[in-house]
Amino acid sequence: MHRIFVSDIHLSDDTPDIEAAFIALLKKEFPFDSLVLLGDVFEAWVGDDDDAPLAERIRLALRALSDAGTEVLFSRGNRDFMLGELFASDIGGTLLADQTVLDVAGQPTLLLHGDILCTDDVDYQQFRQLVHSSEWQAEMMSKSLDERRELARQLRSMSIDAASNKPEDIMDVNQDAVVSVMRDADVAVMVHGHTHRPDRHQHDTGERIVLGDWTAQAGWLLREQGSQLSLERFSIG
Ligand code: MN
Image 1 (cartoon, rainbow, N blue to C red):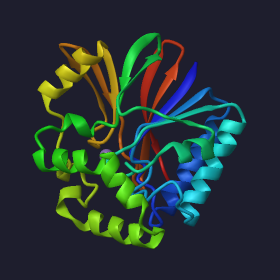
Image 2 (cartoon, rainbow, N blue to C red; image 1 turned 90 degrees about the vertical axis):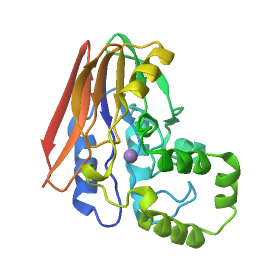
Image 3 (cartoon, rainbow, N blue to C red; image 1 turned 120 degrees about the vertical axis):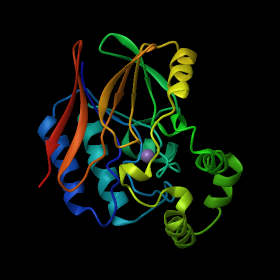
């Protein structure tokens, strides 16, 4: 198995170089068996019916990858939490549950975006509960794309969304949450992103691998090749 995990690419109309680096990575690594997108690939996602050029370009790139035989799995992040089943079918991929256990390098491994581990940010956890509810999402989807785009702009400018992508503005994980989430999932390995603090940590419960965010200078990926896992930083631009 040759699998690549990425998260926190934060694609938007303001990030053409990072978008080019993402497309280039898919081409450079091909052929590989599996791509796992662990949330916040998009800086914002207003709904799977989004017909904006950026959404179309990424759909096409991922569809080409899955058509060529690479499995594409993705989860929602705290920014692209409106990603859904229509996007999955558009790209020939699979939407993962917020917490998914998958065999990675021979070990049951918990995959998640990571925002639920930041339990010290009480305001955000309340916000998350609201916007993940089916009622709230249904109400959003009843609005026009233009209305949703305006709401997304407002959300991004609200402090509750930690408008900046700087790591010092994003809380780190709560250690008790890490231990309890790993225990509940009955795993000794966990992979997440979100905190923009790429590293490999040892906890009482096992290893926690944190993906990095992509900037104009560098991107991050986790590579599973056979029984090996490597957290890799690569230059952009
Ligand atoms: Mn995030």
